[in-house]
Length: 307
Image 1 (cartoon, rainbow, N blue to C red):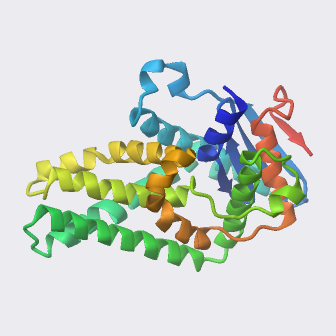
Image 2: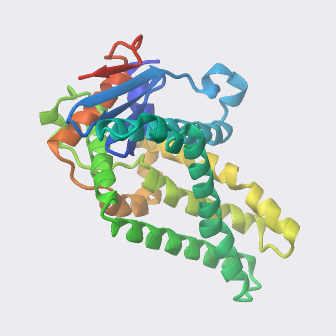
């Protein structure tokens, strides 16, 4: 893969984690965490997506759905690593800590979050819309989509009121600024990263709003659900919605295409003013370490290293 292609695909896998940043490049993933002692601990390893290993899976929409599942799995691992470092740094009993921070526990937490997300952003809006007695399929799905947008907006506003989330938002901003420097072809050092904005079009926040927009269009085509079977068909298209949204997110890296669909990313860019905060220099250093490790600048034979 050429350097230019790497720059276009890297950001989709970047993600802020507690007191750290996870970066995913086409060849490897890396998580960099700032420990309570002030060190940066890195975990990096090779990673090749299923879509690269099996060509039959590397088709539009399908590859997007697979990428989302892979991202969930990688996020669980990154969160577990981040939590482990926090526990070790605080000098807690590692045996007891591991029981509470096992990957199984993390997986269960993510699954619970997925169920709650499905109920909050798909099922409850559908129930509320059905109570309005709208007969027009177009109007029904338009209202349903508006309620989903409202729920996402309220959800984001509420989590910004949670003090503990401020650190995550700062690391989120550090990740975006670092990626911008890399995509511009600049040397990824603190001075260059600092001058870039913290808002990026290929972000999970933008992805959320894309999901709602795509779902409105698709659900309008499916029409108004009138039975349990119609609901099941509607919900079965959620992976397709995620796959289409992923493809649109990737297209935003192409200026010629983004010129025509840029309006789709505007709501996400606006909301990123809430989900990202200006990071400190220490946080940017963590993001830079994660980026370099994901690109292979660190020796990967050793799974962990202190910088």
